[in-house]
Length: 436
Image 1 (spheres, rainbow, N blue to C red):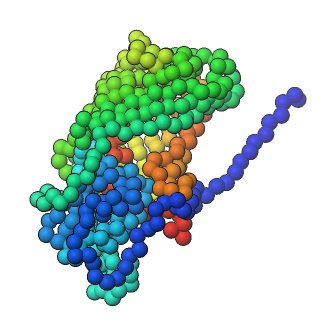
Image 2: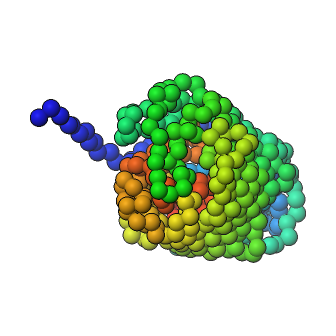
Image 3: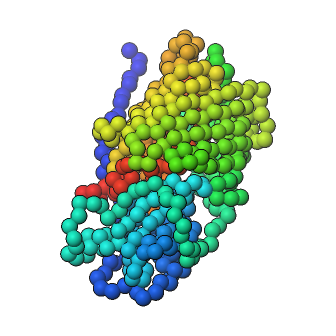
């Protein structure tokens, strides 16, 4: 008779998230009439990059086709980017060029191509009469191996980085709700198109994690329940420092190799292989890792715990209610073996909401509170939140309780994400305000 409880709930249609791009550069107006007699490629490439946020590495020509190689494209709405780039090209590229193609080169691998029929695309935009056809003016195809003539090479930076703010929280434990603000600096240095090093340093700016007194207990190796120790042992942390390499065995076959301080709690070496056919609704991947637990201070030291971990993962775009099913089978960080099932709905505006559950050969008693690992998450692209086109997304994860069973390595490099432009849904993604 001395306890009261309450609950709050709300409803939100995340598929409608969108913000008008009022601070983006004004779109290029598509006009009728004759095209230029020659092309200023330096000016045209800069215009394409301003319109799309792409990094155009080079321009090549083969007969009546001009091909732009786009390096490490990271856009939420690829169809919109292709439209903007095509408008810039159509208004500035000389007559006689009938095809524009965009070759996406991600981490050195030729992932996909988008080919545009210039005449048909322009007719669609200006409502000029054109021979009737049922085909789309833009097609997604496997990269070709034709020989092209170079016509322009753009400056390719070997370094990029930035600073920002981070936020962590924990609630539901004995200490109630705790939070922490951090500032971070991150950087990336390229040795070649396919080999690079990434790093990130975080520094605590303030919060209430100093009141974090609850210590994790477990019958399993403590691979996640010592979160308190990792959060409070040091104010300055080396969150990530790793060497990466991505390659392509042949069409549809990709691989990666990586090593270093892979995440806040583990370092080591690993690799991944992915089979992903062009425009296919499914893909199959395998990752294998040998990792060691890092010191609580998150400096260059390690603790005395090592493990082999890895999974075979199937990705299936079910075609039902835009649901992506991901199923992983393998060994987890605590040495337990089992399966993770992840179901997520990916809306046309790029928002993804999902839930996962992991069941391993650890009994409910040994696993501890919660019986098995599960959680829900929401990923919202920045493009749906800001008034300008911004790559990346914000992630919101909720886990009922952190335990050691079913814990996966938090790999920073995912081949499935890097090859996302191969998805058959790629042209369906668009801002909600455009969809309406």
